[in-house]
Image 1: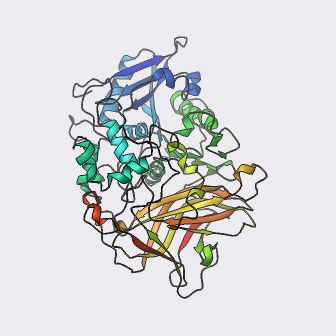
Image 2 (image 1 turned 45 degrees about the horizontal axis):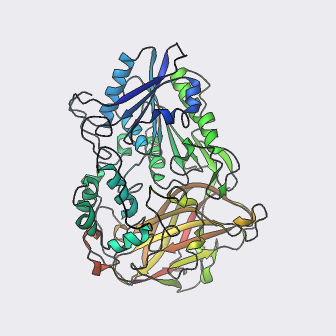
Length: 569
């Protein structure tokens, strides 16, 4: 690199191919394992013929230098400054000058952290970089994705990932003394106990969480899309509807880059996948959900391979759709000329009603609400217990497709559902939860889920009868209702309007199914517990700050809580 640091890099080429080939690069913090990659996720590309380059990023595994988690972009006016963008530039520069029989073109792609590294390559790109595919990159780690959702801290993921990545140059999973981490995190108590009992102030990322509880200048440096203006390298953004880690990222990166995409270099694909699910297996199912075709194999063969072949080898016609999405429910691929789509879309509210009903008719009652008690000592689990460590047990990769009946009926979860649908309802675009709520506390979390309920008798697959499939869900931390930068206490027992962005989706609720909405105030331990008592920083909250609160969700003519659906005409 330009500062003299050497990055461990492996270069692989098919020994039977003699002509000039393009270079395909994958950079990773997880240790290069090309022998595995070339046999499975890259097989379709291996058949097409490329020079494959695998690189450990700075400070990880066999590379020199110091590692920094999601290293922010440096000031490129300083020619000596280094970041992931400059490291990629220097890597490509060395490759095209030193690797025999390359055709002078390079492409880069990667998933998750590799997706973030791909985005960094698009900032001041090397002239030889001709194609990229950002896949499941985080976009803004305070706003959403890995470590926070709307300011609410992703506890189990944040704790375990920072422990894994910052214990040494290689991955080291935190060793829990109990299998059910729900129980472990509950016993941990206040977040301030993490450093005191286990981390000893030795994890820089955890220390950053503690030191920066709000969306300040520190976190704004990690806003990825702000750097993507008038991109010059064709970029294929890839997302998964059931991504348990980075769904917000690729969608937002696409949408932000689209604002200045005058050269039509920015594209999107989203399918029925979990985190990186398009890169492995056939993609025919996720958990118990059958999608009716090999969606992942289709992506690798019919989308990803032609993408790089066109831009790096001049093969194919290059007529890629602006947005290619898989519509779950109907289980079919659809093309759009914009995402979220505008044509043939009607924003249609569906309202919470009395007796747990849900309908497209607005409520008429003068005063009406449903109430529950949220108890931080008995939080709602985000998936069925026992919940093993994130990377050391089953369940993490598929929980977004889990049957939600495991919480349906809990006294601290409100459930609303339609009658069986008399016709299909298709949605394509952004889902917004606009609701009115009050709490007896001075802070609160609100979790809203949009769910597809299968018919009770499901002849096509009888064990799936009554299955509750989560289509969209997210959390809003009450203190950040108006601003992520300046948290404010809630006024106890005061009705407050909230708007929660449940992000974009493409799904068809089939005739005979029901649409369901669930509302709750804990989602543990994927989201840390809100004390429900306002404190300046939840990371400094005392155990005594965690108090029960009575939550009310209003559904009256004056306060009509609703989910606004982007219904396709």
